[in-house]
Amino acid sequence: MNSPVTGSQTSLREANMTLIFNAITKYGAMTQVEIAENTGLSTATVSILVRKMVDDGTLTTSETIRSGRRALQVAIARQVGIGIGIHIGIKILQICITDFSQKILAEHDYPLPLNHKPDVTIPEAIRLIQESIDSIGASRSEIASIVIALACPVDWKHQQIGIPGILRG
Image 1 (cartoon, rainbow, N blue to C red):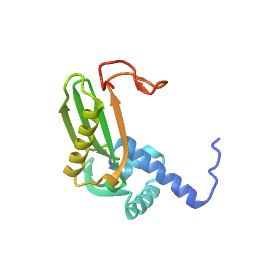
Image 2 (image 1 turned 90 degrees about the vertical axis):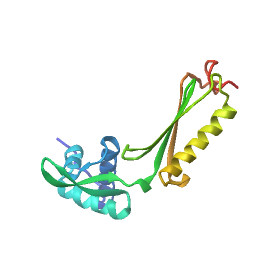
Image 3 (image 1 turned 180 degrees about the vertical axis):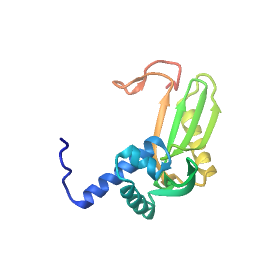
Image 4 (image 1 turned 135 degrees about the horizontal axis):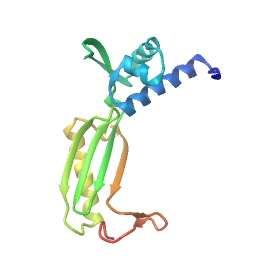
């Protein structure tokens, strides 16, 4: 038997809005019916909470067609923030900017010389990030997260690159 959900209406509403936000973050933009199917919430609850989240500026909606019928597609509003992915490889620097609906907003690849050094690579990454942000009409204040991937192991104990060959020094 399921245990009953206890708490205030406000906390239940907030929990359900988090459930909706997480579903859209995980699966991308979807219709309200698809949200209800993925979260287990009723379509009426989803409709009410989506409307509130649109009013709050967390979500956006647009009309779409699903199975030959008109539907309302729900996505995370970009003003919630953007995420930046940085990949520093042996001979390449890659920048990717996404919004929280997992839509790629900008991508840049930049060739690096073999044995590139941090004092050159890091400023180049910052320059590419700024160019990418400018190209989508965003600002630095919208950055919610930055993820850096290195093409080598990292020695956490000594807080340095684990093998020579990338970002020497």
